[in-house]
Length: 171
Image (cartoon, rainbow, N blue to C red):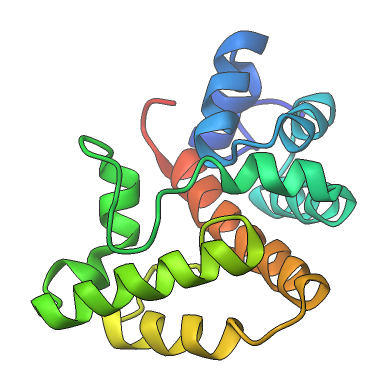
């Protein structure tokens, strides 16, 4: 497929050297297995092909792969300093009251104690209250249930990040 029929950002991504494409994908998801799978399936004809490959790779991740992916995400309410991606995604907590921020900190710690990893949710478009309610609801899940919810949430996050990647003027 020629770049004239592939959307601009996707064509640029397809043309990246391996190390640059690896770095771009790793920014979307910290799972080495996910990144390797997406790299191996390049080039992509359409963004939907890329999304389908991402979904398939996400479905194949082991518990260890999921843990690696989650390690790349800061706790809700505490985006990584200087990281515009986590700040943008967690914008719903930016204007939260001090009380809500404190409650989220406590809930994050309780969740992490229970499951051994950060509370992960696709925060884009959610308010601080919605994220608080979600952690309260999910903390009662079994580890197996929560692992599958995390897999689904990571898939949503990856799609948002991949969309940005293929829509960017310069990858």
